[in-house]
Image (tube, rainbow over the protein chains, first blue to last red):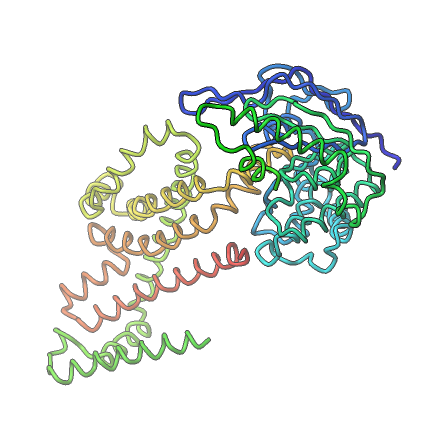
Length: 277
Length: 248
């Protein structure tokens, strides 16, 4: 790891959206610092502004209040030092896997020879050597998301942002990709922020889990994860019952309890059970 | 390959049916000539050089008109997709121009722009313009916004977004517009030649049925026009397959 990594600092972030004639506050009063090289997971109920938070760091959205800094630079737009993986692979369907991985370099104006060599290297890094010519429609969901991961790593980002990257995949594929993501992180190094619905995934991957409340999203808990590294598949079995796993769950349940303490409230257990998955 | 045989077999069947109708009805040559008579006249018209100059004239009109119509249609479609204001401003006029029958407009255009190739190209272009503009607008409107966000996250310039995401994503619809335009361009050229012209397959039709009373030549000309349309359509389909075919 000979690269310098960047930390991420969010100060006093607020962001709202106009929807029809209503004003929805997605995020309010967010202060968060992710030190260089850390893996931070962000969990929270639907509508807690998790994806908005990620887009603010990526420079795809601008905050209404506060500032976002990556390294020593205030974010004012997308940055090549930041890699992004979305919930869907978002591959260009008319390009084969290799050309999709090479796409960021093409946009950056790198010469053709360089970008092909780099793309091949990344394809084998994510375990897809031999699938260079495959079109996105010919790839399984897991393979397509690996291509998306390779594409995000192409420009050697110092920061990697992932928005529920494996949420649409089956449980087994998801566990495997989580483990591979950690392997890549250990080898390449990066500051990672991952948004997820899954408590086990969050605890397994992260050094800390940041819990957001329902709308407007505020940080209601910031739970350090004490599981030793390197973590492997075997670690997965213990994450739910680990201290961090229980603490994250408790924070989510406490937030859901407030939500449901409205007139005619539902049984709390029904709400939290749905949330944990 | 099996499809090609099926197409040819159906063609032969239709020719046979045509011949049977002629035999049964025993129609005179100038009302309904049989396929054999038409084929002989066709061959003769090629051999004595009657057909070629008309063919070349019409083909040039079609190709030039297609080029102008497809280009302006694409640019207009692009602008309409880009700006809601442009669409509200222009679309009533574009639709009005399309709703006015080309048969009614053609004499005016011929009067203003003369009986040379310019008026023909304009009429061809006019008839190709609308399907091309609509196809382009629809195609560009349906580009997945998530791919656009991906492009922006990778700091693609406006130009890169257009060339690497929007146009490739809209290519199936755009090529659909081209295919419609190709066949309409042939219609446009014939209509244009009818309202004023001294050369071209449309003129030859008029000559064959009017002064010459040569119905077999009329049929041969019609078949030539149809063949031109089919060939251009096949070329457009091949281009489409090359550009679009490989994605799913």
